[in-house]
Length: 181
Length: 380
Image 1 (cartoon, each protein chain N blue to C red):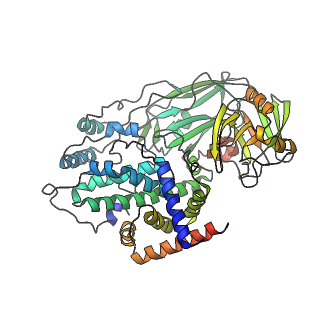
Image 2 (image 1 turned 180 degrees about the horizontal axis):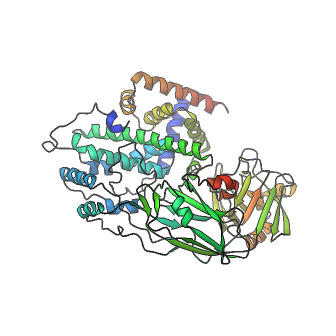
Image 3 (image 1 turned 120 degrees about the vertical axis):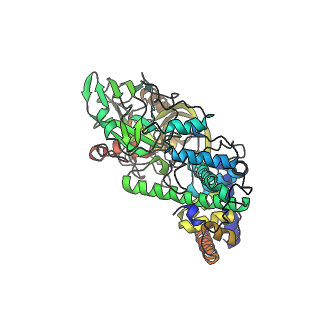
């Protein structure tokens, strides 16, 4: 299921030429960095993150004439980034399963974590061990700073699931991080 | 640890990772329309290449006109254009294909001329250039600009000679992050190491051959290189010694300190990938420059190198490094002079995880029977 199909709750504009539509290049310039940073936290390497964001904006561009509201447009991009990141991870896992030899993607990128403090590295490693859903909720909450309602819309799950994923994820994290002290 | 502590650390950690990976100074790449036919979440190339996308960039017109243009591209069945990259290495025997070189400013003509091309071009680039001398464990490395789906044509077209005699080698494919814009990498090797002191020629007349349905190569390449002495170093984790055998004769034995318990050295056969007289190394808890006589063995950062700070452990056979093979300064200098890129360094009983293909030049850890399957794509 593509991001586009899943976001049918968006306001659709039928007479595209009649109404002002969103300025995709401007949104791209304005939000590129924030979106790549979000994607990096989800896919864990910069080239994949840049590709994900590029694809998300291309996807918006192909539908931009349908979107009236710039906020809804960025909501669409954010959802695309999460979904495309999930696809990247899934492809990686599939490739590994079939190859049974490690691929270079499995090795950390050159920029990987080396500049981070020990505590932060441990926390990131702990986040990567969590179920996918919990990772996404934690990243959207503690990096993107979204509300529960916004996270629910982005991931297309119920606010109750957001709440339980966040508290479970945080509890696991607390357990892992607290283990050493 | 309280929940507040966990939240704070998580918030800081995510921010640190995000901002260090994508700095404020990182330029925003041009917005290129790449996967016009692919829906979000579809099978896009995982690692695109900005420079190659440039010819396909849609000039920004009024949004409605842009939409029309997209539709035109779709109607034209949008064969993706590709600018052959001639910069780089390997001797490119033929120029890039006929569809390359389209100007970025001609979006409209791009979409119309695209309909005449039958297949999507795949560009091949070789990692090494002609005339180099390598150790006997060197793989021939090629990068592919598209996710190819079949390697059989390339396999049957490729020929290799050693001192003029034809030898049987094979390609093995894997996905790759080594070269931006080249999502697939293949290594060509023989069943066993290359003969020593030999002159090797690889001929890859790939241009026009199929790389899978709808894909064909747009270049042909050749590579000529020589091998030096057959240097095989074996690092024994029991005696904590590196033994170098050169052309069948034992050259010397050198004491080492391998990775400590929490950062063990990987087990298996590695190949020297690059050399550096003095480099910086970073990792968990260390960030040191001026590391001398370094010879890289894995992408992750295992090296042979001089470790003057660790002389005591090297002499007493205690594993205490971050995964590297620590050598006495005089030994490291000597081995730096003796060994070359492509030389084989074996760690038959190291404590770490098994060395894999993609962790470096891990080719010799893949059994020949598995190698012949082609890996990522079939070659037979």
